Length: 304
Image (tube, rainbow, N blue to C red):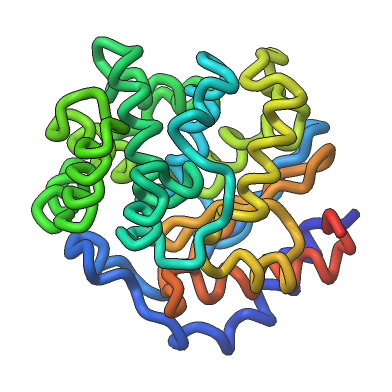
């Protein structure tokens, strides 16, 4: 497969789609990102990798961080995780309170904000220094010791995270948040502010394409069965209330973030990460989805 040729073709064909989305503005620190940034990185399980455009420039990964915290907790405590978080897609926005109240404080899945707050709470329960633990966990996955939090983005989220605070308080009222609310929110805002490049993310997520093992040291991050389950959750929940459209157009497990990044997994083959900051009305990268749709069409690599 000539991935270099395919990436160049994608780069050419997505040009007309720039300008049709909007950079996230509800987090003020993200509003100043150049909307014309565009990068793609492919990491294959045979060790080969391919890059295009701004693929080595760090950006705020936002909700893509939820994949890492979920994998960490799932490996540590196993199926006990699912007594506090569901495994069903949400029909509402990622920060909605509606379903949480209907479901008596049990979030529909670990990728909506309420579910991610519960996962973060579990990390705060297990770790003395949860923020450093999350950072080190991700650094080891992508073999990049320079991964850092963006303090400006974290502070911007904390100052404007009223909906997340409401979710945390509701979870606490339902006894589904065990640690102090301020600690959980601070850790959550920090994890979302982590900056990584497309290349970093493709490296870090390769275990999801490689039966739960890292490429370089074959370290087990998840068991085969757990890897299958995380990929299935990404398929049905990873792009919030746009998962149906993403499955229709792309046909891969994926996870997006409002920083404009999307990670997608071809099980047994590779991980591809796209970054394009302009978002559609559902909070997902407008150009990124088109690029991934072109990728699966041109390569014929889809789970369907």
